[in-house]
Image (tube, rainbow, N blue to C red; front, side, top):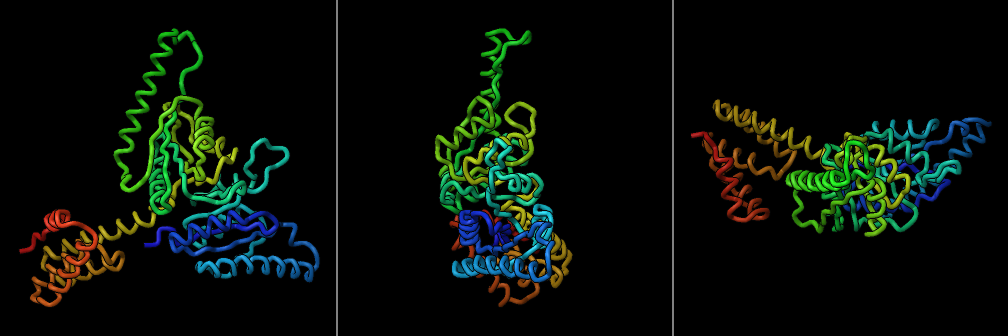
Amino acid sequence: MKQLEKILVPIDINGDYSEQLNTAIKIAHVYNSEIIIVHVLSEEAGSGSISMRKMLLDSVLESLNKINDTLKKERIITKDPIIKHGKLIENILKVATKQDVNLIVAGSGYRLKDKGHKLGNNAEKLMRYSHIPVWVATTKTESKISNIICPVDFSEPARGALNNAISLAGDFNATLRVLGVVEPVLNLSPRYQLDDLEEENTRRMQQLEKEMGDFLKDFDFAGIDYVVDIYAGNVPMTILNMIKKHNHDLLIMGTTGRSGLKRVLMGSVTNKVTRELPCSFITTKSKDILHLRFYNEVKEIETHFKKGVKLADKGEHKGAIREFTACLRINTMYIPAIYKLSEVYKLMGDEAKAIYYDNMAKELLTRLWDEKLEEKIRKHYKSSLK
């Protein structure tokens, strides 16, 4: 299954896009992704004579074709570069939507002279407005995906971010740090006495530990080299300090939600952290970078499977076969549908096909699971048809 089927890489041919491209190539190699290159000409580029505009377009296309040649040498699936004209962010997002990409890999851009942060203005805008996950590759160091950090605040965006972090850690054989931070009460007020202050901060840490434990129960860390850290402190500064202390090369964050126990937008925390550009980072909003397509497939499979079971119960065997076969077109290894096909064909008196599908299921189970789990699956999906 292709988890990241299409990656969009907006290229600034006048900037340093080497690590941006290297990052996209590494991701594409792991997920067998297609990379789509896009360049947006400025609005000013439309002025001048026809010959000057053609010369500019030819020059841009030559540069983009060289990038595509690099992708082809890396055996990356690609297509002709896309050139647009007008507003940068607007055109990138339009292309991303039209091409139905799963991820945008952007460069960090330039630091503006009148801004104190290090993240380029265009990269920041793209991160803010895109509902497609954005992976910003820093140009400070060689692109690596070996040491991931994922701050969580137990919100839904944090849940999606951690799912992504676990998947990427497994696929890239990277270590993973899950970080929880609580804002302590630092100043005395009429509400707090000195003893109350210490007690309140202790209570907040205990609450954070409990929420973290409950939160992590829903995740599968099997095969992942990971640690869980809990700290009290300023959320953005704590995240930045942890990245620097442990040399993390990839940060994954959701962009809305809560920060610790204090009701503030996670988006503001994300902005504060990513503006310092401590390492490459991924921001996610509504789309889950790795799991959305998988969840949609599961939902579709379940719909066909339930229809097939109902039809089989009614004795409508041909209809049931059609629905179970639809499951296999989505995922050829969906074993419950294979067992059901064997059972329906047996009821129809087609012993050869019944044996064929039964053997197919056994072969898959032998490859994927041990005998104990096989028995559980057989029992769970045992047909009620008699």
